[in-house]
Image (cartoon, rainbow, N blue to C red; front, top):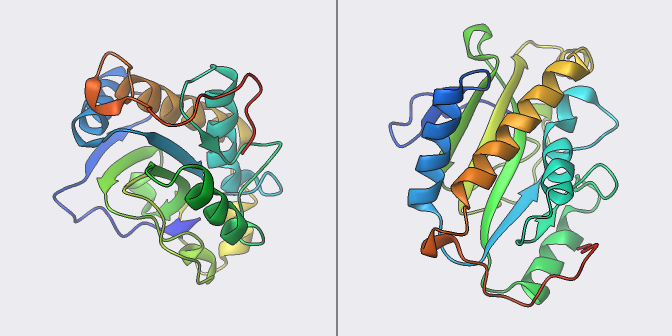
Length: 198
């Protein structure tokens, strides 16, 4: 989870999770900026509702039988304790991957529910004071709550139904943006096996 620092970046594409028009706009932005061999890297933990946005998104993608690798699900979350190992696995198994990093974020009160897609890497753990490696070629964050001084309390008091709805919206953005009719988003790495696990 991180604190939202993207709102002033004009290269961002921002939309609300409840708006079908926003979902289409975000998918289009992703489609225009993605390259071959996409891989989705979802950072977060299912031990904290506010930080479960990305693992929920990863699980939804996995259950949709997408034909690109997904790291970070409810069953196999990517978090501070195993992030380096997962990054090593990507370098070994998917050296040419174009990484789409997904995470929850804190922002201003009027930003809650926004999904932000931007070019450039994710800085996971920033919102909770952790220094983790920057990840990804494109970042997708969902603003799950307003930033307050007691971050630990804030991220534990987010409603699960809200986070689930945001995860479904982000998964829709990714699936739409990586539509395999788009030649720029083809996955040309090793064939994925049924029940693929990173």
